Length: 347
Image 1 (tube, one colour):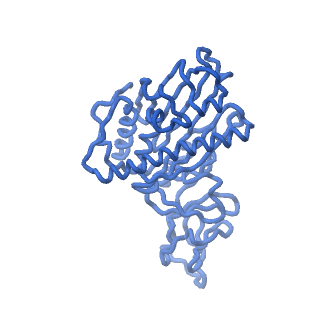
Image 2 (cartoon, one colour):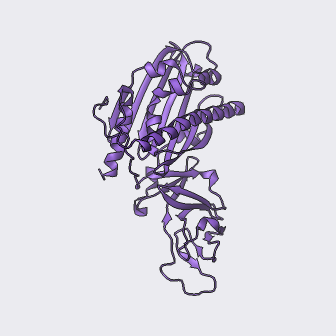
Image 3 (tube, helix red, strand yellow):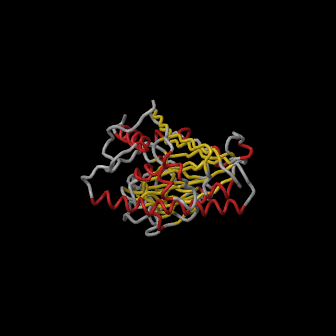
């Protein structure tokens, strides 16, 4: 159905976490033989890669004296605690207690399923029996030879849903990102919002318009362009932006640029959020200078968002009774929040 905002749920309320989904725990290249401590959905996790290359994740707490396992080290296919030397396999079972032959049943830690896909290490935070890798989001551009790839990570001091708000509603780019992707027409162009059970799509089409600074650099445009933005949300916190441009009036993609901005959002805590982003493109695939420019431009852009959203979080916390005001551009925001709330209720 196509929607516009009417009565939204309280937009200032903190949103619940959705456990039974795959989240990005980090880039696959980050997960190595040195244990990595990371908090996900407010749970301390230790991530590591075994000698065979398997990515693994355990609760970051040794059951012996409750020291962080991330302070230990990898031995073969196991992780050894750095305090008294207990050793655990990837399923969380203790396989060695130095100086003790008997291993009690309580000598175990929670293990989390981890799968490497699309350059990311995905972790399942819910019931391990429900962890089906087929439900990992499909991001085929991320490792296709027909697309070039830039990526990065930004950590925001905010509730994760504030970041989803920012990514699903790009009208702010006109005002926040004037040095990279912002143009005057984005904010004034009407959007079409389509909401399905577990999907929200926001579309904006801008014809015969000036290209952004980044598009001029990337596409070499010398005149006006026809631009599009198709922004898709899927649970728990994934937003892919299909965006590009062609010379105005041509509809000729061979003379234009086609991109995907992949945004995988992972809550660290109630007020801190990981944003794993990738910018993939179908042009100048072997141009290292272009790859570097786009990585710098997107990093600059997202850091501009961070300044505003971190401040927004402080305002939300200081004004718990104040309700946010919705306008037409917030149709996607409203629908995303409704999906999160429904799924949190088990619907």
